[in-house]
Length: 112
Length: 118
Image (cartoon, rainbow over all chains, first blue to last red):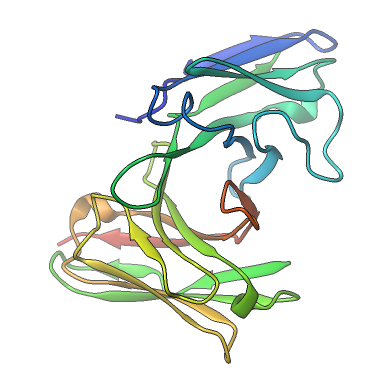
């Protein structure tokens, strides 16, 4: 069972917008602005698309955006494209005895 | 940044395996590094972290005391020594570079499959 909670599946039509939620606790998502999101296509390496809640790495489309409110972070993909179909994972730095990072269970995005 | 993980394979429960992650176009001596795994049909799970100088290391509770992370900065290679392997350690293991502030994983390797089975 993953520490952060994500919906297992989301879907949308090309051109639409979708939002994926990521719910944690005051020990992880709510504690730091260190939430990141990863796109993972089967057979390939995961790729960071959002870091530190709402920052996009160089080369990532502006269609991807992130936000956070309390213990819940969100990833929004606008103008859905067929190439966006993938698994999406949230991740947060977490407070513990040692350094710790926790992932969500992943969300499968289907572009209809 | 290019990271290539290797060393995976099939091993019996209780045995050991060492994974390697060769880096190019990046100096591991200046990079924090992680191992992250994905069990079949499951999500990503963070496994272990080492700071750029190796003075700070951390492990997930599920592997603490069995796995050891290390870096050979001269050889530009990251390692994960896995002892007392269990069937639940079966996964694709990815190496990933940590960001400067350790807050996220900014580059990932392709992964190597470890299967623990009798």
